[in-house]
Length: 561
Image (cartoon, rainbow, N blue to C red; front, side, top):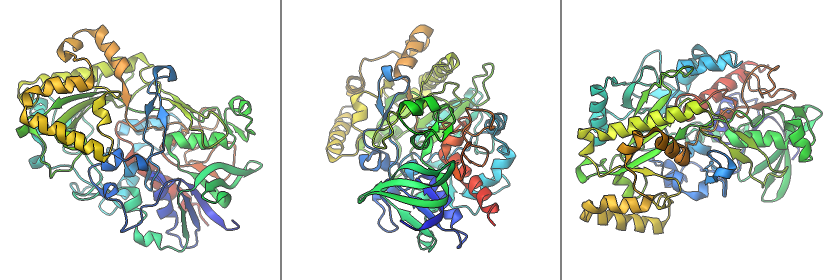
């Protein structure tokens, strides 16, 4: 291809769609957006991609096949880790939770060398991206592409209401807006959708109007192998499509592959730890040993329960999480609001999902870090990804605290009346296999749901068979040694990988990019996505990733002649 673009964007995920939309606002700026997955063109979007319940999460055709990670180390086993291979990336698949994190999170970014990324710096871009349906004040935007809303209290499912009563009895205030009120407390979880449709960056930034711009070119089902260089200057990318290998050239290359695939692309391109690259016979362009390190994610556990008929969420209410409790461990060297319990009254797309609720205890600000490492120079070989959860003893302690809080909530007499015996959900159990989006699973779930409706008394027995050995949760939390073992054995993760190409000072070799996303040691190459975050924020990463893309796009635009 002889066309030379001003910007070549690698990845049409959460960040890439924002960049393409913002950079093409200038009609003189030519942008190429390259996506490995399929397009979702306006008017022809699959129904599950539009659904404001994340049905798309369960559809294997939208994710990278055979991609697995280790929640801890490789010797502890591998698990499937859905990474979006579709327009909008994870924003087209995941739960649409729209937490910003807290001001303390961004103060730590600044402390890590991310200049101009404090709360006062990022708030204007949070406001720019959103139209907040519930709040109109200086803490919120009113004209952005992404609608933000919260489930009104009068629509709360019975479980959500009962936990609100528990919270008030136990000195946790009801927080109406966790994106502006950062106290410990309980309240509706902000989400980015309307009552009828998901609001991903693919839908809300790459609109029909944006697609018609003459200066935007989009390629789909095209996978980038590596960045091309002349000396230290990035000049283009080498990609694969249905016809074979093809090169695309640009004045600047913007990598937006996410917390796992962005560092892998840099390493395949010769940017990373020199000794590792040399062992793989990859020519070293820049020695930056921090590439792929500092990988962070939210560790989580799940406690499920069979909801009685009158305690279930209204089937017409297509919410995923309805509310959450954010609270503080108060341990030394731990930030406030570092623990979290997510509340769900609907846990899957199928008939069983309407009957099973769960509480999900989580550590929002973990100290443990993992890494991403490529196994070969070839793009077909997925990188080795180890999250190394709970390697820091403080994380074990806090996970035990969060799990204990969830069990204590379920022991409340008002809440207990709504359900059968709670059970721990394990990622390897048969119950989770029912979640795959297939006609066969739909039939199985319908049969099982019908059985439990007819004979609710057998739910404890049936669900314990599906989830393994029954565990007395009350006894478990009273035995610290057993609880620590349970937590470490059953730990899982959310889908919030960040930090693997982190911002920082140039003299810090573990930093990969500067505060504008420019990769150290080379020219004309930026990383703009969740991987640049120095630390994981206290919340889901979709909205903060959009903010990062908005802020860095603004910097690029202001620097244009």
